[in-house]
Length: 495
Image: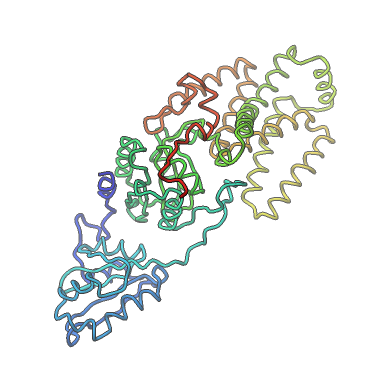
């Protein structure tokens, strides 16, 4: 049912008119005119060469050797093709196993024909029948499966997603080898015709969420899906919110874990990252490696991430508020040390923090955009030389550098880069509020952020769960012991 609802989405007609254009060699040649990689070959097969076929494919999109040995060679073999007296009998012979291709499908519209060619198939067109046969022979020249670069784990699996949709679905099935793991596919983008796969575990995933996702995918009307940002914006309940509402992962084992937990996975052809939904704020604080560690160690590390979250958001704002409006809250010895460090600095505490945060953001962008050797050099120069020179020149105080550095390092501990970006944005808002109204401004902006988080829903699920559900919060926030979740299965024991 869900697969059918996903496949009802059809791309825009290549003919530019409503409805399906008929299949013909001339129409296909016109659709791919001025395409240098479009290859054709006219074949005369059947008894006495009575049947004319046009073989078409895109160079580089198909496996050339398999196409030659499995499709073209059997057609040119007189002992095989001579049994077909006309085009209809030849098509029946090919569908019944006349060629060695792994899959074959009949196409009766120009749109289906163009989609098959652009996705790595070789097609045989018959003007006599007005139909075509498609043989799926995708090229295997894609990036090899390698180790994850963003989500590293010491004890987890070492495979990550690649740019091929079918390779990614196979990686997920290796971690969840059950026929209950269902895969539905659809095509998005009027021009790009990008294939999207939806994974869910039947009997575990909420059927309402699967239907809701199928409806949202069917309503998407854009020219192309070539990045995650466009699809994420169209699927999110609140696309203007800085907080991520879909989980990103490059690890097949992590996506399989989400699927076993009842979530729905989304894979896009050409993008080596998967999406999982629905999600909550607490899910962005967990990592796959927590399952591979001792229970106590994983609990301590999870608590440390929440502490880093608070430090990354509030430390600059609290320092600015206390230093500017509430000096009585600072211990005397610490206050004297701060005064001694700032006596020769010409800028206020607020200007120091704002300038250091901007400089920290510039260094981060420079390190990300430049090549690795140059990026590392820029980071070292900015952190050591520029920072040390600024302190020695009495441009900024050492305490301001310490506050900004601790806050920046705390933001880097976020498992999700998208959540880290949202935290940095909240940090800037809290700092501006602290500069304007002290701790009262920090409290006001904190209430606004909490209210915004409470208003977000991810496919009908509360974004702040389990914080908003009450009960035993520690049990809900921290990873649960596997012994409590495990159920004995005697029939699968060792002999």
